[in-house]
Amino acid sequence: MNNTILVTGSRGQIGSDLVVELRRRYGNKQVIESSRSAAPNIESLSYEVLDVSDRQRLEEIVKQYQVGTIYHLASLLSAKGEQNPDLCWDVNVNGLKNVLEVAKSHQLKVFWPSSIAVFGPHTPKLDTPQIAVEDPSTMYGITKVTGELLCNYYAQRFGVDVRSLRLPGIISYNTLPGGGTTDFAVEIFYEAIKHGSYTCFVRPDTRLPMMYMPDAIAAILQLMAADEAGIKIRTSYNLTAVSFSAAELVAEIQQHLPDFTCEYAPDFRQAIADSWPSTIDDSSARNDWGWQHKYDLQAIVRDMLSQIKSQKSKVKKI
Ligand code: SER
Picture (tube, rainbow, N blue to C red):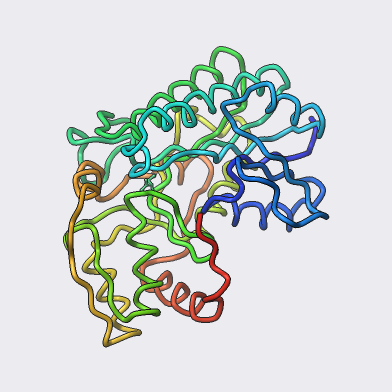
């Protein structure tokens, strides 16, 4: 198998951290970044402009670099998806279909993130099982359910080695998330440090599954490195680390910044958050390929505050 890696959506919240770790493990030349934006000014590293809805361009890049693995991260998140449902479908579903088609033709291995957003109002909210009702109320969730079914179809019908995780809200400090419902759990740190106060767009009792970026990167790479025989789920694995409410997050930040205050002004994202699970049963991931998280709420808050304080000026907006 060719061993060049292509990352789509490489400038996003997960992509920017994943690329750093992939390059650390496999070397700069082995990892090709791509996104819709014009090339960044880093001449020594490989970067291609790619709109994932353009299958021909995707295939050209795969051939040019003899790509063997795609981490397909290009996606619109839940809140942005509600503002532009057509674009959300086009990027999230047609983009994935293109990746799977090219993977089928060129025997590529694929990682694709699904989300807790596949679940909806009729899904059990606590310890949501791997197999549960999926009745999402957002276009984003609909694209993720469709995507999971496409992944399973391409794996079963054509033998494409595609692997996926239902990611919870991801908390990180290198690149801000763009247009998600769980973004409050990232924004709050910047506002706490900068202004000492935050207006949160969900209610204090809103409890959602969350994960720190180092755990998310570890999970993605562990899943991709796992023995193929161990991967029993080809839709997408439930995955979680911690669940906490907005109020519990505030209280934990106040342990470090006692003067920090938070007000609550729920907006349209409250209904999205209310439709998602509070806690997730990820025992299949733990049993099938040994998933274990490292960061709990205390560790996340401690590290986020110290990282943002030391890197304040470097954070990238997407
Ligand atoms: N973090 C994502 C969002 O809020 C969920 O997958 O849209």
